Length: 140
Image 1 (spheres, helix red, strand yellow):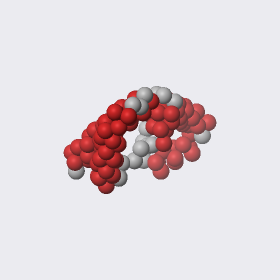
Image 2: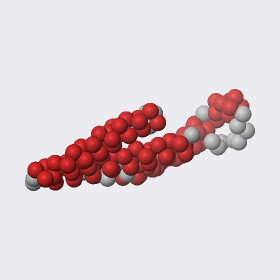
Image 3: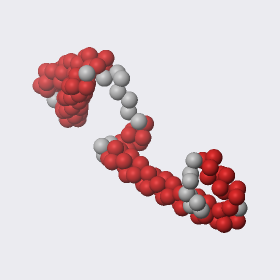
Image 4: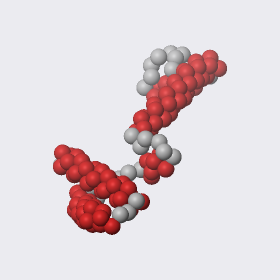
């Protein structure tokens, strides 16, 4: 299934590239139009129609592809959309490090709190550790 999706995406990409190239060439032809170039222009128009039909055929095979809206923002800003994944991974890694730091801080706080509570309330903390199944005296 994944291979079929990849080949469908490659086919769509190929058709889009051909379509874009035809549009570029048509722009050149019409910008300096000469009557003898009419047949070439007609050929380019027919090529565009053919590529549009091919793109339409690809639609059903790539219908389930979901693209995050942020990718379009990258394109609008003139940035490479392939950088989106890299940027997401870097943001996720930074967030992961931040959360890991918070978890470590809470663990240290808990350990220190249990030590201090044991000093002040030794009987209550012994009961707490018994309920929790922790037999270590005076520790977390």
